[in-house]
Length: 275
Ligand SMILES: Cc1cc2nc3c(=O)[nH]c(=O)nc-3n(C[C@H](O)[C@H](O)[C@H](O)COP(=O)(O)O)c2cc1C
Image 1 (cartoon, rainbow, N blue to C red):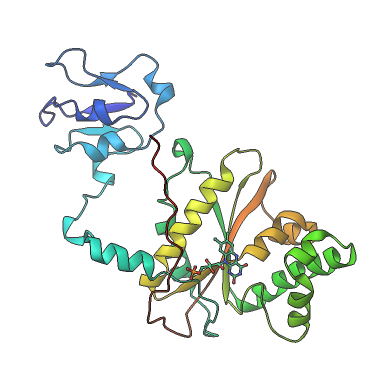
Image 2: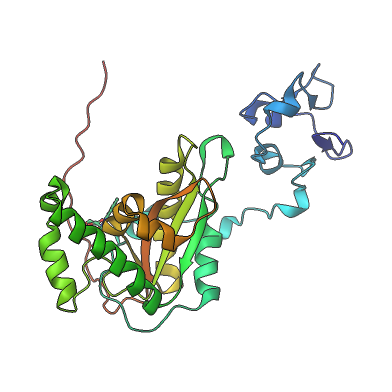
C-alpha cells in the first residue's frame, strides 16, 4: 500500500504538502504533477499527519491517517491574545484538594488531551499510569517517605538539600507535603533507553497541567514523588511498569478546594539579542 494517496479530483497541485513535510517525503516532479513519494520517503515518514492537516482541499490521506480521521480546525474556538495570556498566566500549581475522587472518565479525558503534546520525531513514546484513589496515592507516597527516611539515615546530601527531615516529620504528623492530599496521581513512563524521554514526558505533563482547569481540575508537579520513583526500588516496583520502562514524571490531580483570584508576579524575562 502506498504511503499516501492523492485525490486527483481535489488536489490543486499547490505544493503546500511538499513544502510542509518535515522529512522531505513528498515531491512534485513538475509543477503539473501530482505529489508522489520521494526516494526513500517511506522510511523517512514520521507519520506526523502534517500533509493531511495542511492541505486546504482535503486531497491527501496517509495510509495510517485518512483525512476523514482528522477533524477540521474550528476557527470559532481559537483563543484571542488576551484569552491566551489569561489562560497561561492563571494556571496555578494546586496544593489543596477536595477529598472527592476524580472519576476514571475525567482522568482519561485529561490524558486524551495531553497525548497531543509534541514528541521528538513524533515518536509518541510517553505512556501513562493513573493512580486513581487517595488510598492508593497514600500507599505510594508512604514509599516515597521511606526513600526520604533512607536518605536521611545515609546522610545523603539530597536529604538536606530537599529538607527531607521536615517532610518526614510532617508525614508522621499526618501532613502530606509530597502528594499534598491529592486524590489522584498521573505518572508518565517510557523506555529507559529512549534518549529524549525526559523532555517528551515534561512537555506531555505540561499539556496535562494546562488541560486540567477547563475540566474543573487542579494539578501540581509531584517533584519529590518523581525523584523517589526514579531512585527508590520499592516505589519503582510498586508502580509495576513494563520491562525496560521507568517513570519520567508525575502530576498530582484533584478538584481544587480554593479558587485563585489574581495573577502573581514573576521575574522579568532575562533576554539578550545576539548581534
Ligand atoms: C519540575 C517541577 C517539580 C515540582 N515539584 C513540586 C513538588 O514536589 N511539590 C509542590 O508542591 N510543587 C512542585 N512544583 C510546583 C512549583 O513549586 C510551582 O510551579 C512554582 O512554585 C510556581 O507556581 P505556579 O505553578 O502556581 O506558577 C514543581 C514544579 C516543577 C516544574
